[in-house]
Amino acid sequence: MRGIPILAAALMAVPVPALADDHVSPEEQAVADAATAFMGAISSDDKTELANHMIPEAMIFIHNQMDPDNPRVDIVPVAAHLDRWATRRAKTAEFMNYGPILIAGDMAQVWGPYSFELEGKTTHCGINSLSMVRTAEGWKVGNTSFTMVPPSQCMAVGADWVDGDDS
Image 1: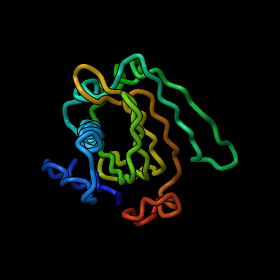
Image 2: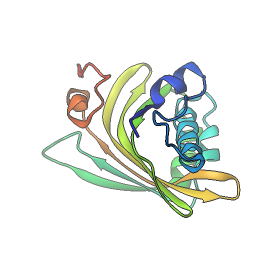
Image 3: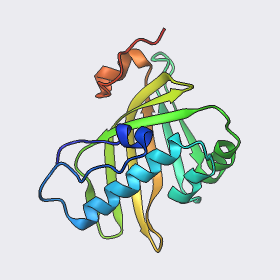
Image 4: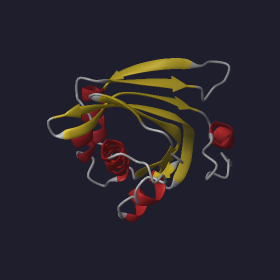
């Protein structure tokens, strides 16, 4: 499977085309659709939409490398993140490309580079690792881990759609 640009679909509110491989299973497509819906929720003006795509008991692991001399890992419960996210008023957008989707029963993995914008300005990039869980309502994001690097490092992590100017 080749990478899937989630970035355009989230902004243009159009469906993401089928995965760029003729051998995509319906299950892989279902996971891709769920990941795309999650990314769209991050960019949505409705800040409560994100809760529809995440398991509230899950955890978020933030591998913050914004200051290379002082890297840290922050662990945030999804429920707390959703509470804070719902009160956000700033316009946000997240763009992600991903490649192969791994599936084993009721779990799946989506991995790839991303960039994050706040009020139209790229604030950071990194690698997203989305652990997807099949629920009665469909696939949702369970635990997620992501790295954070400054925009000047976007190309290095594969977010080659960002110009790298972090001024």
